[in-house]
Amino acid sequence: MSITWTFTFRAVIVLGLSAHVFLMYNLARVLNGGFGMNLGTIVLAVLFSAAMLIPLFWVVCLADVPEMLLSQRAQRRFSNGQCPSCGYNCENISSATCPECGTALLEPARYQWTWQTLRRYVVLNVIAMLIGVGFGESLLTFDELMFRREASTLELQQFPSTVLLSRNRIWPNNDSNIRYDTLTGFTARNSQ
Ligand SMILES: [Zn+2]
Image (tube, rainbow, N blue to C red; front, side):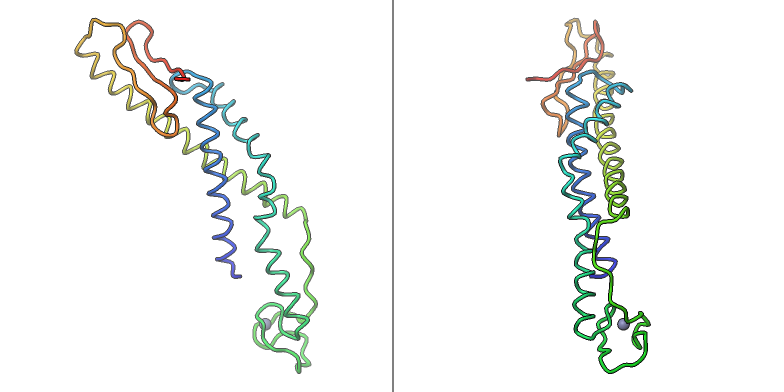
Protein backbone atom coordinates (compact mmCIF):
# COMPACT_ATOMS: atom_id res chain seq x y z
CA MET A 1 0.00 0.00 0.00
CA SER A 2 1.67 3.19 -1.15
CA ILE A 3 1.41 6.70 0.27
CA THR A 4 -0.96 7.65 -2.56
CA TRP A 5 -3.19 4.76 -1.59
CA THR A 6 -3.22 5.82 2.06
CA PHE A 7 -3.94 9.39 1.02
CA THR A 8 -6.82 8.35 -1.28
CA PHE A 9 -8.25 6.13 1.44
CA ARG A 10 -8.23 8.98 3.98
CA ALA A 11 -9.57 11.43 1.40
CA VAL A 12 -12.57 9.13 0.89
CA ILE A 13 -13.12 8.99 4.67
CA VAL A 14 -12.91 12.79 4.92
CA LEU A 15 -15.39 13.14 2.04
CA GLY A 16 -17.81 10.75 3.75
CA LEU A 17 -17.52 12.65 7.03
CA SER A 18 -17.89 15.97 5.19
CA ALA A 19 -21.11 14.80 3.57
CA HIS A 20 -22.39 13.84 7.02
CA VAL A 21 -21.43 17.24 8.46
CA PHE A 22 -22.99 18.96 5.45
CA LEU A 23 -26.36 17.26 5.97
CA MET A 24 -26.36 17.70 9.76
CA TYR A 25 -25.36 21.35 9.44
CA ASN A 26 -28.16 22.06 6.96
CA LEU A 27 -30.66 20.25 9.16
CA ALA A 28 -29.78 22.26 12.28
CA ARG A 29 -29.40 25.54 10.46
CA VAL A 30 -32.86 25.26 8.86
CA LEU A 31 -34.65 23.71 11.87
CA ASN A 32 -33.68 26.66 14.00
CA GLY A 33 -35.59 28.82 11.53
CA GLY A 34 -34.87 32.30 10.35
CA PHE A 35 -33.91 33.75 7.03
CA GLY A 36 -30.40 34.93 6.38
CA MET A 37 -27.12 34.50 8.22
CA ASN A 38 -27.37 34.62 11.99
CA LEU A 39 -24.32 34.04 14.16
CA GLY A 40 -26.27 32.26 16.90
CA THR A 41 -27.89 29.86 14.45
CA ILE A 42 -24.57 29.20 12.73
CA VAL A 43 -22.81 28.44 16.04
CA LEU A 44 -25.65 26.11 17.07
CA ALA A 45 -25.55 24.32 13.72
CA VAL A 46 -21.76 23.94 13.93
CA LEU A 47 -22.00 22.50 17.46
CA PHE A 48 -24.79 20.15 16.38
CA SER A 49 -22.93 18.83 13.35
CA ALA A 50 -19.77 18.40 15.46
CA ALA A 51 -21.73 16.49 18.10
CA MET A 52 -23.21 14.27 15.40
CA LEU A 53 -19.66 13.22 14.48
CA ILE A 54 -19.20 11.62 17.91
CA PRO A 55 -21.30 8.53 17.02
CA LEU A 56 -18.93 8.10 14.06
CA PHE A 57 -15.98 7.63 16.41
CA TRP A 58 -15.49 4.12 14.98
CA VAL A 59 -14.20 5.80 11.83
CA VAL A 60 -10.94 6.24 13.73
CA CYS A 61 -10.39 2.51 13.15
CA LEU A 62 -11.12 2.89 9.44
CA ALA A 63 -8.70 5.79 9.11
CA ASP A 64 -5.94 3.62 10.57
CA VAL A 65 -6.53 0.62 8.31
CA PRO A 66 -3.62 1.58 6.01
CA GLU A 67 -1.25 1.71 9.04
CA MET A 68 -2.50 -1.68 10.27
CA LEU A 69 -2.07 -3.28 6.84
CA LEU A 70 1.36 -1.70 6.29
CA SER A 71 2.60 -2.90 9.66
CA GLN A 72 1.19 -6.39 9.05
CA ARG A 73 2.88 -6.60 5.68
CA ALA A 74 6.21 -5.42 7.12
CA GLN A 75 5.96 -8.05 9.88
CA ARG A 76 5.15 -10.80 7.37
CA ARG A 77 8.01 -9.78 5.06
CA PHE A 78 10.49 -9.67 7.92
CA SER A 79 9.57 -13.17 9.09
CA ASN A 80 9.94 -14.41 5.48
CA GLY A 81 13.50 -13.04 5.35
CA GLN A 82 12.49 -10.16 3.11
CA CYS A 83 13.10 -6.45 3.49
CA PRO A 84 10.13 -5.08 5.51
CA SER A 85 9.98 -2.01 3.31
CA CYS A 86 10.36 -3.21 -0.31
CA GLY A 87 10.12 -7.00 -0.05
CA TYR A 88 13.59 -7.66 -1.48
CA ASN A 89 14.91 -11.10 -0.52
CA CYS A 90 17.55 -10.46 2.15
CA GLU A 91 17.95 -14.01 3.49
CA ASN A 92 21.59 -14.50 2.46
CA ILE A 93 22.73 -10.96 3.08
CA SER A 94 25.11 -10.08 5.89
CA SER A 95 24.56 -6.33 5.63
CA ALA A 96 22.42 -4.58 8.24
CA THR A 97 20.49 -2.67 5.59
CA CYS A 98 18.54 -3.70 2.51
CA PRO A 99 20.75 -3.51 -0.63
CA GLU A 100 17.69 -2.57 -2.67
CA CYS A 101 16.19 0.36 -0.71
CA GLY A 102 18.54 0.92 2.23
CA THR A 103 16.01 0.18 4.98
CA ALA A 104 17.50 -1.20 8.20
CA LEU A 105 16.79 -4.93 8.48
CA LEU A 106 15.25 -4.80 11.95
CA GLU A 107 12.03 -6.31 13.12
CA PRO A 108 9.36 -3.70 12.33
CA ALA A 109 7.31 -2.28 15.19
CA ARG A 110 3.84 -3.68 15.66
CA TYR A 111 0.90 -1.41 14.95
CA GLN A 112 -0.45 0.26 18.06
CA TRP A 113 -2.60 3.21 18.94
CA THR A 114 -0.59 6.29 19.77
CA TRP A 115 -1.17 9.98 20.23
CA GLN A 116 -0.64 10.20 16.51
CA THR A 117 -3.74 8.06 15.96
CA LEU A 118 -5.80 10.48 18.00
CA ARG A 119 -4.23 13.48 16.33
CA ARG A 120 -4.96 12.05 12.90
CA TYR A 121 -8.55 11.43 13.91
CA VAL A 122 -8.93 15.03 15.12
CA VAL A 123 -7.32 16.40 11.95
CA LEU A 124 -9.60 14.34 9.69
CA ASN A 125 -12.67 15.51 11.61
CA VAL A 126 -11.60 19.15 11.56
CA ILE A 127 -11.10 19.01 7.78
CA ALA A 128 -14.52 17.34 7.42
CA MET A 129 -16.10 20.06 9.57
CA LEU A 130 -14.52 22.83 7.48
CA ILE A 131 -15.66 21.27 4.19
CA GLY A 132 -19.14 20.28 5.42
CA VAL A 133 -19.97 23.55 7.19
CA GLY A 134 -18.35 25.68 4.49
CA PHE A 135 -20.22 23.97 1.70
CA GLY A 136 -23.48 23.81 3.67
CA GLU A 137 -23.46 27.49 4.61
CA SER A 138 -22.45 28.52 1.09
CA LEU A 139 -25.32 26.59 -0.44
CA LEU A 140 -27.85 28.05 2.04
CA THR A 141 -26.58 31.58 1.56
CA PHE A 142 -26.59 31.15 -2.21
CA ASP A 143 -30.19 29.92 -2.13
CA GLU A 144 -31.27 32.86 0.04
CA LEU A 145 -29.42 35.27 -2.21
CA MET A 146 -31.27 33.89 -5.25
CA PHE A 147 -34.54 34.24 -3.35
CA ARG A 148 -33.76 37.86 -2.50
CA ARG A 149 -33.19 38.45 -6.20
CA GLU A 150 -36.48 36.83 -7.13
CA ALA A 151 -38.22 39.01 -4.54
CA SER A 152 -36.55 42.21 -5.68
CA THR A 153 -37.76 41.72 -9.24
CA LEU A 154 -41.29 41.00 -7.97
CA GLU A 155 -41.42 44.03 -5.71
CA LEU A 156 -40.99 46.26 -8.71
CA GLN A 157 -44.37 45.05 -9.96
CA GLN A 158 -45.96 46.12 -6.64
CA PHE A 159 -48.43 43.36 -5.94
CA PRO A 160 -51.31 44.42 -3.70
CA SER A 161 -51.51 40.98 -1.97
CA THR A 162 -49.65 40.26 1.25
CA VAL A 163 -47.69 37.16 0.28
CA LEU A 164 -45.55 38.12 -2.61
CA LEU A 165 -43.28 35.15 -2.95
CA SER A 166 -43.00 31.73 -1.36
CA ARG A 167 -41.03 28.63 -2.27
CA ASN A 168 -39.14 25.78 -0.69
CA ARG A 169 -35.41 25.91 -0.24
CA ILE A 170 -33.24 23.87 -2.59
CA TRP A 171 -31.87 20.42 -1.67
CA PRO A 172 -31.19 19.26 1.01
CA ASN A 173 -33.54 21.68 2.74
CA ASN A 174 -36.69 21.10 0.70
CA ASP A 175 -38.72 20.87 3.91
CA SER A 176 -38.05 24.49 4.73
CA ASN A 177 -40.21 27.16 3.18
CA ILE A 178 -38.94 30.67 2.57
CA ARG A 179 -41.27 33.54 1.87
CA TYR A 180 -41.25 37.22 1.32
CA ASP A 181 -44.03 39.68 1.85
CA THR A 182 -44.12 43.44 2.15
CA LEU A 183 -45.34 43.34 5.77
CA THR A 184 -42.83 41.02 7.47
CA GLY A 185 -40.05 40.84 4.91
CA PHE A 186 -38.05 37.62 4.56
CA THR A 187 -39.08 34.69 6.76
CA ALA A 188 -38.45 30.97 6.87
CA ARG A 189 -40.37 28.12 8.41
CA ASN A 190 -40.48 24.34 8.24
CA SER A 191 -43.29 22.81 6.24
CA GLN A 192 -43.76 20.01 8.77
ZN1 LIG B 1 14.27 -2.90 0.83
